[in-house]
Image (cartoon, rainbow, N blue to C red):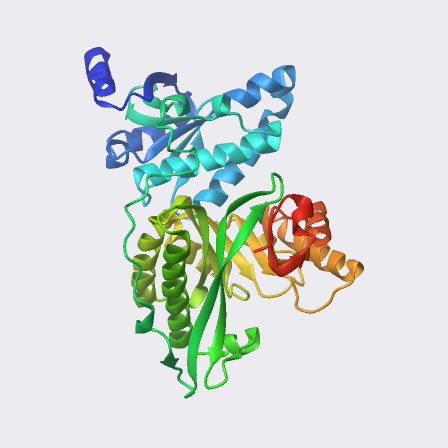
Length: 419
């Protein structure tokens, strides 16, 4: 992009963007030449992520540690984008990221989240001035023209984690799916509740998770996890949709017009694997996007036994709707989940076992789970904890988020109120 044409392009952009130029190294020219005429650039689906802050803060240590930084950055980008994009280091501190199947603003959000993760890992914090992401405007001969996203000039109502959300759409009606006759003849319905979820580093509420129970008529007996796994795929789909419909209606009734920071929505793998199910699910996710400020967190259930390659494909189909995607564990893993490292999951979640647990029993539960999940993802959510002591123990072993069981004792001692 030369002189006048570049200036004209900048004039058409919002005020919070500023023009920059970055020279590229010769060994990446072939890839850049392939992107040069691609519609991805015109559509704003190509970004640059800058590691300038890490190089600056490391100073003389940068030369010895930069390969470690590059490896972690590549791993983080691959994990966040899953199968819907690719990343390439084009200079000492710049990674080029292309996301063909993700809309412009959602792609920028992914890039910002990845950079925040990288800065947190190496610097301990991600300051606003260190979050350097550019939207690529043109690729020339040995140079890239890009526009820097300037957090200081963005509207005050936006945050770096959020992408613009559509107006609230009316949630689909629950009575389309509940109650329903299962294939084994039983009449089933889904019951759900909104449960606050907290980040353990700051003890701040990140939003709600949608909990669910499957009840069988006429006595509303709750089905256990094993019983639910034995249901047909069609029945599981109906439970997913009944849960989402009821939960979104409840969210609208209980929170009025106030948008929550985020919302964790459960969805079964079998629903994601079915084309018909994905189409209906997309309608729910579009409706849910209008109810949150920062984005949706999709919790993929029943992932045990799913091949990693199949999970990559399933996650890619909801990535555009999601700020994060986590995998729901039915029980503490018996082995490391490292094979799931590159499937696109940002973390895992698990429910505390029911009943009374001694401190030693809970510690072993938390240790087993975090040890198995740590090689695959940094995020770990423990749900249904019974008090402040369990929160402290889970955090000690590496948990990042938690929720309390109803009536949890001592929640106020860590700055949180029980749901």
